[in-house]
Image (cartoon, rainbow, N blue to C red; front, side, top):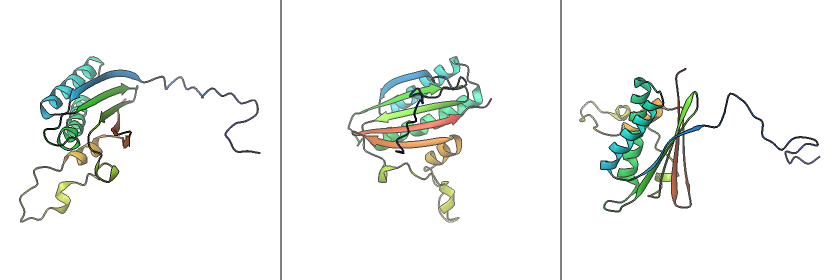
Length: 165
């Protein structure tokens, strides 16, 4: 019997679960990929999510995640003085948010997101405390899932953040 996933008499229609309807599109906007616009993108997204009923604690986490991720696009994806855009798409389900960040800048190093170790793990007591390097650590501490891909010269960063009941 061939293992092609088909069964005699089986429906081709996907299984439906009434608890998992289509995600609600909350936000879909494109901005120039520079630091001046990152702040506006984050503010606009937080305002939309606040209007959609999210609480202050969740909005604070959203703000951190989006600011860190979008700042990385502005800082690393496009070479200095090279214009480009970044697109932020947010979907909401009852128990999760999904952020999708797209850009046509440079790919992530080695084709994947940084590990995001805490910068203090390699801290020597005689060194000055690191000023940066916390972004990926913070993102990974807050979110549930993180996926990066690149297809047809476009970067896709998809982040899922669980919502409290």
